[in-house]
Image (cartoon, rainbow, N blue to C red; front, top):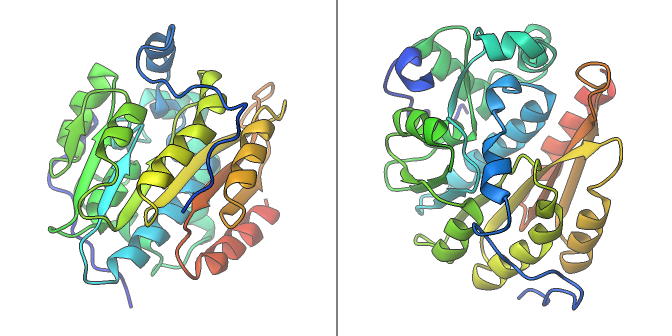
Length: 298
């Protein structure tokens, strides 16, 4: 049965403008004031990478989880730490420059990687009916499209221009123009208590690899019923390894799903994409097996 779609509300032109304690060696948890963290984080622009293979994995799993959570009548909360602009134009200069969307969502649609009943396909169809064939929803718009009027959405974005665009793309959400880690830490446990937290940094700041295990531990202790989903890149130098080891020690029952794919271009360091999910929804293994089969055929 197709999932009901709430749908977007304006034009593409407008909208695109009980948990164990952390190990003793874990670094202190700190947020916005870290060194040059804001400056380095603000240098990242997702418009160059929207709709790529990493987005496909992340958004397929996110849409599936949100559809599962909204199948129950109780309201929920969605929180995202690094929201971006929410809506992307795959016909724009940034996307055309890298060509990553062509190898990602464009190929996925052409080759029918997902059935039309999949929540991500439904969201994409809804968004493109409203904004045209080059529109691509980021995770905030996926959430706003799938969630219901009684659900609550909190989005954090520090980049001024991206936050302005996000305000247009997700008008029903609470927009926080602040550090996403600090925002989530302050909100949790949220109301409603059912819900999902997406942690989706660019990892341009290497300190993120160190802070995230302790951050997730802190959130999970305060919000033990929340689904906590972390996206991370698989890089050729395997710098994600210690972070994942710490997370798996702390959360042995969590879902770890990784896919590999060819680099987007010569010299590009990302060779795959991963999702680590604390309190994964029941039945998600079927979705990860579907994605495994898709990426094995690339």
